[in-house]
Image 1 (cartoon, rainbow, N blue to C red):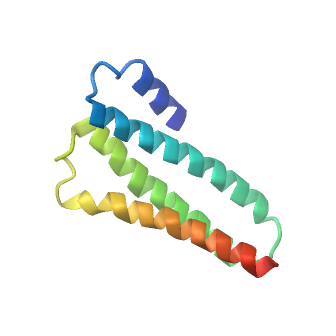
Image 2 (cartoon, one colour):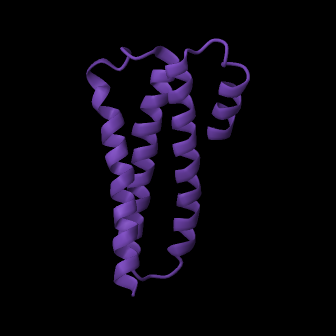
Length: 113
């Protein structure tokens, strides 16, 4: 989905979106793609039972972050800056979820040593 969003933003939607909307679309797709790859790497790390609870929690936080952070940026790209209304807190909450997931991966790595 992230690759399709980047392709659409670069080609089909470039003339229809304003600079802010194109920026939100690009940022959402980049974060989604990065964290999709991180989830794949996390799955490989979870082969060992050590710190599996921390790594599992990190994965759930990343998935929540992708949904909230990237989803809200995709929404903004599609509908504009006033469109989230009272749900404007979704973007920072999603960002915090992504950061918390990385924090758990760091803690897991430190505990493994």
